[in-house]
Image 1: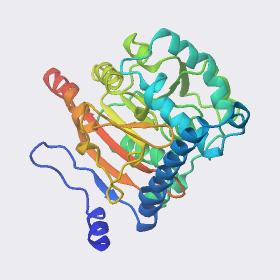
Image 2: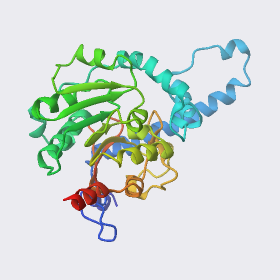
Image 3: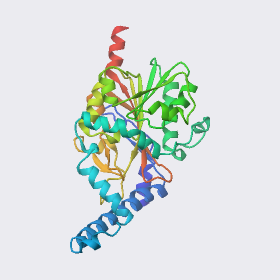
Image 4: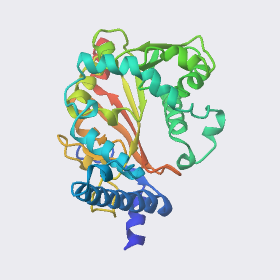
Length: 337
């Protein structure tokens, strides 16, 4: 059974003739599959059961006993259930003003707690895709699309950039293209330039990326993001796509791809096109939303040219890489020509 299953995971990417879009290919070594889909999923099941048992026991204990420290896993499950049921990540519509202000004012604190990822170098083009870090995978994918595209590219934006090691690497490699890092923190530029090399063609925009798009403050030819679109609920994601469809030719996603949290299906990797478009499933420690990208992008005039799931060594997730082209803008360009 396992040999057949893993043989299926190694099939090459192929095109779905019925829709014109690419079916997602999967390339995951056995070790990484077992680590993420079986070990991590089992660990979450155990934590949930332990959490439920502790809650039941707590209700029968005295207040003094209840004051004892929580085991480490309980904080993680608390956080998962909190994100699942309420809070910023659970909003279906675009963020409201209060949430935006909170993220802008507290984003600097979040960035301060995260280490800067390793800088990118030319070595990423020589290694196997599956051996690269998340940031390296994204940098290589964007660089290859910039080298190959025949569409004029003046501006490239990174949404949800935080510490953006990708843009300065690309800015040096493509000096005639402007790169913009976009995220909530008010001190986004200050935090980045304090630890990363400055580039003349690399700038910053702080604020809610959706608002910046809708107000015309940014209008990238190419948008890329890593571990970002998985934070959007469906309506917010569609609002982004509606705004992007007016100006952006190419979308590049490089997203963490988890098994469905607490799912009993350990023996498969879910392709995005197999997900119910209106019900993105939750997965991972931070309850990321896993979308049907083919459906959502298609509604807004984008056609997928690449969709693949790769292993992510030493992480508790895989990586989804997806590239989509704006067919509506291509038609408008052809008509003007």
